Image 1 (cartoon, rainbow over the protein chains, first blue to last red):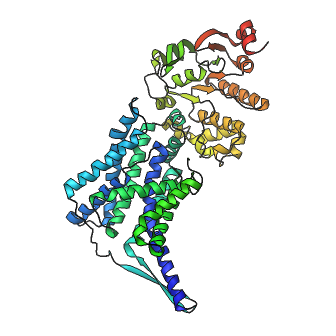
Image 2: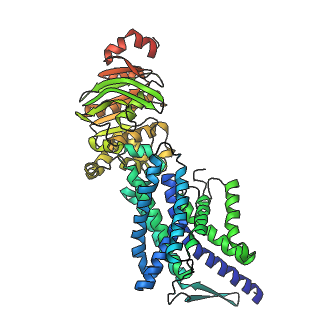
Image 3: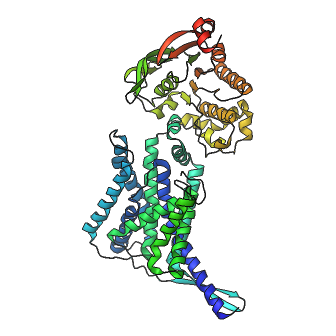
Length: 307
Length: 234
């Protein structure tokens, strides 16, 4: 193998690695939105803004109390769960119950919530870009591969690897929770047939609170994991709401395993596109795939979602 | 045990039930018969509190239940096997059955009840790990009835259990209903299969355009000329 080929392979390998690591975080963001979509049948357009809130919680926990972002997950997860429960209980459910309001207006309400949250952050924390300067932010793990007489050296960013691992554990826990526990089964039952779920004695209103809480907690966890590798500002939510929406469509609306796949595909698309086509169009690649999937696979990549 | 007292029920501006009153006594099989659109399923949905009456009320063991939430019914001992089965299609047969036993008491006896349901419907045991959406119509009906029994109801409400089933399966389902009743469960049965239903029912009510027009014992209604003409084609 010539050194040029080895160089190309090294680049490709590196691009794939960063795509998948980023995709793991995207999956976590998408899981929350997909869960909410599955049960409440609405797209939560404040999803990215909820993540922004979690990122600020993590930031302040680090800045004021020197709490490591990964440790702060233990605070962020329950806090975001409570915030999610409150949003559903005090904002979305009352709107749903008003006969004069179309159910679609819950989606509009989430848009409004997103605006309020990001402007509240602007007011409280200013528009300054912030970051969480952990000591291991730029720590990298190298992996040398011998291939055809050439050495291919691949690098893994330590915080990204850690984030990927934690996202994997959280994702797997969610699957187990949904598959094996009564509450998990009640959530799935409510998503599949709300009326029949009520006949089983399931308090479907309570299930929607729990579901929105879980969705917020999951995207909050993604925010905490993103803090050490990303910068933070009040308007960061918008682009991530869009990403979450793309992931949810890629996975098939409300399809949980699909959301994981959708996240990985989006991560890979952004990573491959920005290296091989143009960094400037990084955010466009997800949407190109999004449009293609909507046209050719409207039920998502796995073909099981609700078209 | 169950008393429906002069209920009026409407979907929006469209009134479906007009002053419907009837009663189910403990240990009975009571049937509600009538043509498509006569309000039978609406009546059951109102008993389950999925719909609220505009007038009148639903009383279970003396207490009003139309003011309660639909999810309170299971713990009161009322199971509603809805029209068109309404299984959770992307869950296995076993998961569907487990969802029938969510009350604290039912949870304690889950393994025994699961065994019992599998004894009544051996077919479900074979299909235990299959997704409910992939079952045949008959198997889905068995699963829906099994799911209703999992909560150990004292009152079982069945909405069109024979709909779309082959004659052999219909006979099976009616035998199961009889068995369940013999085991001490009170049954409220909504059916279009009038002949079979009246044969097993202690008493029956005939609904027409949202009003009860006729009532009597199963045998009396079977002999009634109007019923024979309208529903049995005799």
